[in-house]
Length: 161
Ligand SMILES: CC(C)(COP(=O)(O)OP(=O)(O)OC[C@H]1O[C@@H](n2cnc3c(N)ncnc32)[C@H](O)[C@@H]1OP(=O)(O)O)[C@@H](O)C(=O)NCCC(=O)NCCS
Image 1 (tube, rainbow, N blue to C red):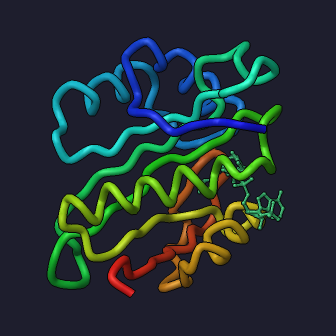
Image 2: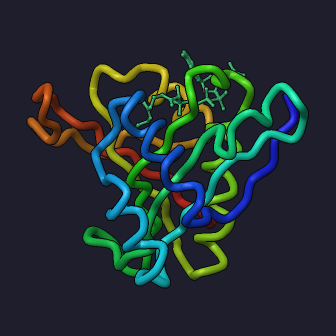
């Protein structure tokens, strides 16, 4: 399945929110995405678009949002990935992997030294994706998530290695 990565546009937000809701991701909602898109120059907001007829029924097959922020643990900046999701009809085509790789490439060009994220302790598919991309578990955050309440694993990857 062919797809390509593009910067998120305001027109994409309804489908981004749809994927967010289907995937039970942290709720940003329309206004949350729009706010970062318009006001946050350090936001990295990208989408995957289909590049063949079967995948062009939607504008957005998957998306990633993150922010380049000063690291709380180390010197220098890091990309914190806030949300990443692929529409259920388009999973296991490499979209999640490509979104993260592209986000990390952008973050490096912004000067980020690391890439970090939290993931639900029970979310084994996402953990597998991150481990395959070279992330490591660096900590466990007790009851980090709500609805349902659950621990979060903090994962990180050095972008310079
Ligand atoms: C996690 C998620 C983003 C992966 O997206 P995707 O586009 O299907 O991922 P990819 O096709 O790029 O998968 C890359 C690799 O990740 C791993 N992976 C992805 N889904 C997996 C699954 N269900 N089970 C096991 N491994 C999985 C595999 O190693 C896979 O490589 P392979 O297909 O060559 O075996 C997607 O399942 C999703 O949107 N889940 C719901 C939202 C979510 O959990 N987001 C992460 C929050 S922290």
